Length: 202
Image (cartoon, rainbow, N blue to C red):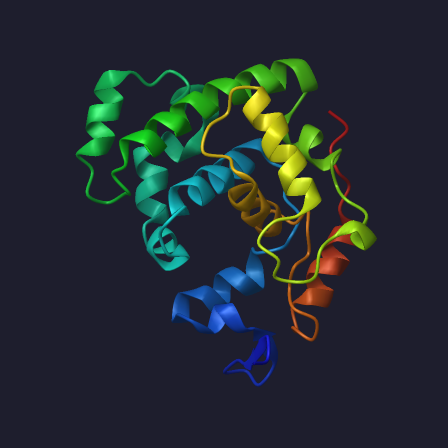
């Protein structure tokens, strides 16, 4: 089966983004484009963690609800959440009500604060791990050497719900890996954005 589908504009795209109408805009404007903002990176990693075992369509449909519930993923605010906040989030039908994932998001906000204090920024730390494209697995592999090493590094720092598959999906989403399918019309656009991008020094 081809990894591509013909989008309504007549240009080929990654097959997965043909699965729902709302996927196309996310695929064309966000997925695989480099991100250097710590808040956006924290949001992306949290949402990938919440997605574990669910469909991305569910998470994308609830993204604005997640932003409202988690103070727009401002890590300094989420890091101060207590049991009352956990109870509030568990009662919020607009998000995924999974205690383990909610508590992991709070824990990870705290660990993010620690990492920023040590490394300068989450973005700077992440981009220091950018792999050589030659070292990446074939397109659409569920994990990669860099996701496995980053998963281990995050877990060593006390992060939770950051297994190698989740981390790989995060790296695809935030542009450390350009995993648009060969022939996808957006692949060269993501590559051009990466060439113009300057990773933060930290």
